[in-house]
Each structure stands twice: as C-alpha cells, then as structure tokens.
Image (tube, rainbow, N blue to C red; front, side, top):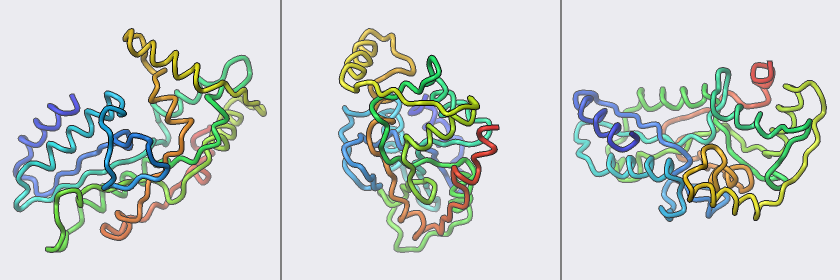
Amino acid sequence: ANVDGTRHVFEATRDCRCFIYISSSSVYDFQNAVHFEDESVDYQQLSPYGRSKRMAEDWLLEQDWSGRNLFILRPRAVYGVGDRVLLPRLLRLVKFGQIMAPGDMRVSCSLTHVDNLAAAVGCCAEQKLPESFELSGSSIFNVADEKPYEMREVVHMLLSEIHGKNLTFRALPIPPLRYLASTLEVLQLAKQFTPYSIATVSKNCVLDIQKIEKILGYLPKRDLWSTFPELSG
C-alpha cells in the first residue's frame, strides 16, 4: 500500500505543481540519537512499515519533477486530539495500576503535534523554491515540535492525569522483551508488540528540524505541554 499507493497518487496528480508526501521517522534505523535528513540508513534494521515508507521515498526521488515541486515530510510520533495511534499505545502500558515500562524510558524523543504537521504542509504548498534548490535529497524535511521530550516524563504525566492518580513505573528489562518480540515477529504473531515498538520508547530518537526551519520557514507553535489539557481530557 505504501509503495504502490504512492505510485498511483503520483500518476493521478501529474498536473499538480506541488506533491507533498507524508513519510515517517520510521525510515531512520535508531543508529543515531539525533537524525538528519541525509544520513545513511541500514534498510535491514527498519520495520516493514519503515522500509516501505523509505522505498516510496526512493521511488519518488527517481521520478521526473520538471516544473513540479516534491516535498517529503518525516514527522515523528504525530499526536493531538483524536489520536488513534500514539495515545492508545501508551494507555496499554498501564497494568495493575502501574506503568509497565520497557526499561526506564529515560530517553529523548521528538514528537509532532498534528497542528505543527499541518503548518509544515502549508509551508510546502506556499513555497517557491530557489533555482539553486537541488531535488535529490534536498526535498526531504524532518518535522517535529520545537524541542524534544523525555519520554518517561511525558508518559508519567499523561497517564497519571488520565487515570486520576500518581502512577508508578515498573521497569521491565529490555533484552528479554526484545527476544520475545523478535520471536513473535518471526511467528507472525506480533501486532503492536514488535522490536521496533520497543525501540521507539527505549532509544533516543530526536529529529533535527533546522533544515525545514531554514529553507521553508517552518515555525512550530504547538507543543505537548500547552496542549496537555486537550489530550488528557
């Protein structure tokens, strides 16, 4: 769906001057704590989802964009009111009145408020790129809130507010969790519990957003703390 669907949309929009592809931070392989758009990636270390998004990116970059603009946006963990992905996953960490955390979750992570992602899309749609702008790789932009967050602090505050009490953490050792997740993945029994899902909350993953700020004038105005009442309500 990610690769062939992208091809179909490309074919159907040949008359559009601006093509904006919403990719994902899943195209990074967690080998670095801070991720830049031009870093090399080991495709074998990506999740099936991340690999398919990366393949779609690569296919788009190979096409003829004469007279058209291509923008590839890589948001990290999009959240906001109505979120059906990130918040439900966090809620599943609560068992028996405790937060069952993979490791201590003291990792730095970028998050992306949906309004900030929408603002990035707006920047792309309104942008007229300079003549010196080179397409290959240069049309790729990380998107995130202004500053990264400590995952443990975010999870604790959000889940405690939702449950109406101060939840405690119970740190679960990473190696056996990773082994179990890998086994379930091989047996094709894994859904949400995968090696990649464990890595997302146990490894640093910060997106550098200087490029989109400098080239497209992106200015993230929303963050988790200012929208906290909306999310926990």
